[in-house]
Image (cartoon, rainbow, N blue to C red):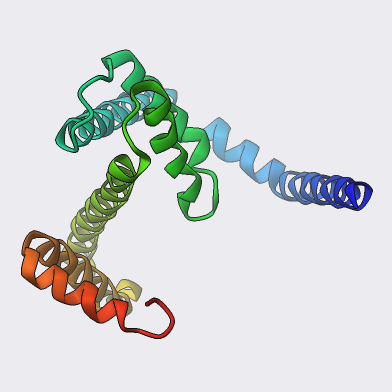
Length: 193
């Protein structure tokens, strides 16, 4: 059984390597042209804003940890665990980021059940931030386009539907009786209950 597993893993690694090689080879010349045409001075604000974004996200992470009662974590440990999540974010749906809750438990003894919601809250607030950025982008495109010929107009209803669901979810979480009622409904669903 172990031999089959090892062969399967090796096969998946080879398949992934071939896929990446084909992907790179097929577009390498075009990619090289784009890279060479890219203005190097743009790298400074891009890297600066990216690092500033990570700083703000870490501050949010540390604040959320304090909010759920994780008092015994140092700033260095908090930052280290937060940065470790970057590698974990490559997992499908970023599910592996829940391991950050385990790392917090190892460092502080805080139960995973208390810190796992912090990761969910991070994902929700990140999603809301992306929707705000998308709204700004939609607004800019709609203001500068002629309106009827904009391909993005087809996506505006879907965008507002997702935004509405997220805003409704955030509001529901803030109203405890409403959230308990919703959880009661979910509990009675045959698939989720």
